[in-house]
Image (cartoon, rainbow, N blue to C red):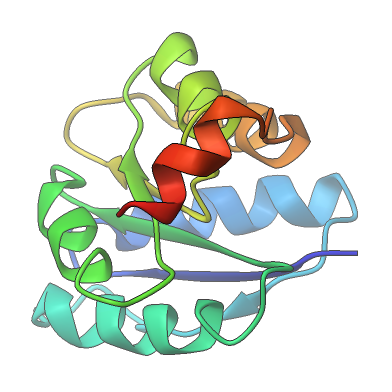
Amino acid sequence: MRKIFISSDHAGYNLKEYIKSYLNKKKIKFIDLGPNDNKSVDYPLYAHKLSKKVKMSKKYIGILVCGSGTGMCITANKYKNIRAAQCFSLKSTKLSRLHNDANVITLGSRLISKKKACTFINLFLKTEFEGGRHLRRIRRI
């Protein structure tokens, strides 16, 4: 079973809370790394916190939410063995797992609906990495 970590900044807080409800309904366990309210925070602090956890094991997955998804993605990708993907469509989400073995999904609360966010997370969690030629490429990162 994969361990899932979730975090956001203030702009992503409400979507993060919605995602937590969705995960609870699906009986998917997760660990919320904050923040605990929607007061202004600096997104890198929460991207760092999550990335430090996810990089510890190949079985760990992260969900990061900010206004655009971009800042969280940039920050998370500074870590060795983190492959964060900003997901904005079904295709981008599926390919991030199939071809890139992404272990962190980043979402933009100002760019996608709550329903789409949950659809992308569900797809992200169920899609397995293809390996093969893609593994060779990942090793070159």
